[in-house]
Length: 373
Image (cartoon, rainbow, N blue to C red):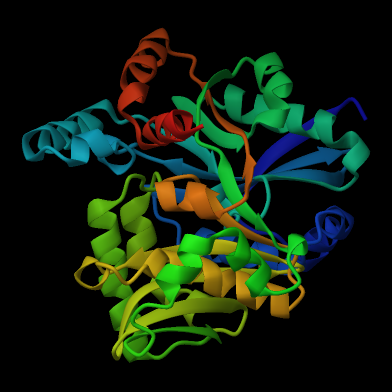
């Protein structure tokens, strides 16, 4: 397989999805991995455009990449240092509009609900060749000013060979559920957590449910998300689009998703939603209402609730996205090192990215993890 052709597409047929069945089975995933991305594709706008990049050999589909094109790229979306300063954030918004930088992004948290990399192969043995072709295609696309991909560091070599420069990134965190036969075994490893969870048992309850959720519950989930976004260490590259669309998707209107809800009295004070995919749970969205967070250990209760559900339902792994807080580092036992891989044909944009990246969300998270290791 030496002559590979790549092309963009905004559709993926049932037959094309079936071509990757073996790839998904090897990762203990199921075809539901395509669901959320398909919804993003259908909701795309000229400013936030999700697309499939397909690789063909002799007319046969052999690989696929999942990406989103942002036009223009908004500096305010992924730079928490800018969001903290009202004057600077206005300046950044103006610069983003003037620069009109068109960016192609691959971000596992956004693309596949943390479940898998943004690349899929018909045959695993040809994976390197297909990945090289896909990287070359986005790199050489004249419509993109920049390309950024957050991916596992195990493929550093392939990115380097394709001309991408690696920047620091936090690791992705996940729970290896196979280590535990019961939630009591996990709590035995975290004695202070066990003690904290005993507090306020009458007032604070964790409820794990399969969707859909009610309109009243969605309103409370929105409150949690809005509060979390305001105080978050990291936003995804198209945060506003995500917030405006997520509650209209099937995520909150179907039974393919699990919702871990933490109630304080009768109000949802914190939650995390997961996509069920094979023997994995992939984190889609979470939020916490700061009005109720004091001494209620909301984040900890969500972690324990998701793990207990996974143990009972024979799930092998629970994905929690990039390390973005100390609680996650302390309570989630497995880390997958990642990098942010960058490409641009413009020397000026390469210099600007290098200079500004130190203020980006992903870089700040990498420093957080580095300081605690």
